[in-house]
Structures are given as C-alpha cells and as structure tokens.
Amino acid sequence: MELAAEDLKPMLFDGYDILYLEGYLINNFGSFETSCKLARGNNMLVALDLASYNVVEENLGSFKKIVKGYVDILFANEQESKAFTGLEPEKALAVLSGMSQTVILKAGAEDRG
Image (cartoon, rainbow, N blue to C red):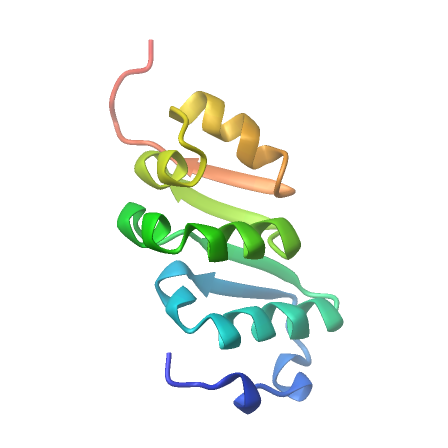
C-alpha cells in the first residue's frame, strides 16, 4: 500500500509467473496499474481478488479498467460480482467470464438446487 508507482521496477517481477493483487489496494491506483503493466511486460498472469463489495462500489471504474485491461484470473464472491456487474451471481458469472480468462465465483453453502 505504501509503494509508489516509481518504486516498482521490472526486475522485481523477474522469475515469477503470477501477480496476485488484493482489491483493497486499488486505492493506490497508480501502483496497482503499474504492477499490472510490469507483470504483463514480464509475461506473467495477473490474478485479482475483488476484496469487498463496498470497495468495488467505491472504485468501480478503476476495477473495470484493471479487469478489462489486465486480469487473467478473477476472484469474486456473490456480493462483489453483483457490485461489479449489477447482476445476480449466475448472470454475473457469464459477464465476468467474458472479461477474464478464469473466474472463480465464491458462493456460500446455500443450496442452489
């Protein structure tokens, strides 16, 4: 969270396959996006966990930019997927799957029949 975009250097990404980003860090958008760009430049996959529905709601434009531009693996729960798409989980999954190569939609223990 305290890293500035200028602190991030390509060599920090050498030897890794996946960049995992926690959505709570989106408030530092410059570093968040720079990390994605550097990961891409290093042929890494980018994984993102959306964090929390209220964080998604407050930063929706930033999340959409990152997901559309960089994310290969997206983690979201039902509330986060609804905050991101405005849709219920089943329909949200279809939309998210069109934006990211792999989507993991975390659902509770509720019986889905």
